[in-house]
Image 1 (spheres, rainbow, N blue to C red):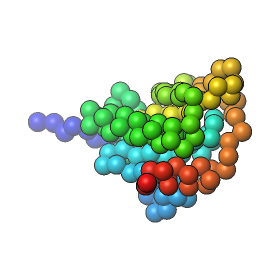
Image 2: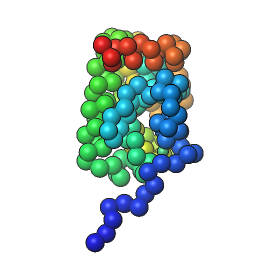
Image 3: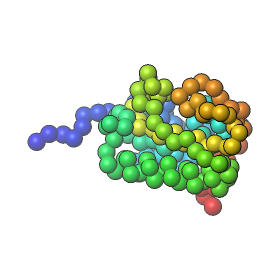
Image 4: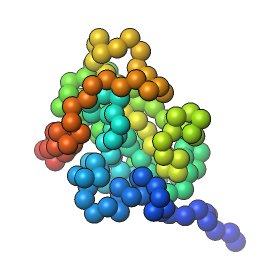
Length: 152
Ligand SMILES: [Zn+2]
């Protein structure tokens, strides 16, 4: 008999764990909580509405996620896309995962899928993996718009 995992479930030094334990979802930019995953605005967006669907459990990235976590993360990706489509009317999306620091991941111990809305003419190439940022609206404005749409 063996245990499934000995990985820690939270880390007080982790941005996502801190967001979930902060007690103020608006200040933490947490848009929606599921059972095993959550939807959060990116604090350093590439475009207005840039959000992430992430696992709640502190314990690794995509290779470490359970089937249940994968299903809930993707359901939140879809919910996020539908909400962004309704609020921002983007022409498309970049959806993707950066795995590991070398690949650009800012949070290493939670699977998180980026959802970046795109508009025709916003730029020639979306630097999801780079450092160029498009002028976004204020984060609290984005949060309130998306939060209202999620609740409607
Ligand atoms: Zn964490």
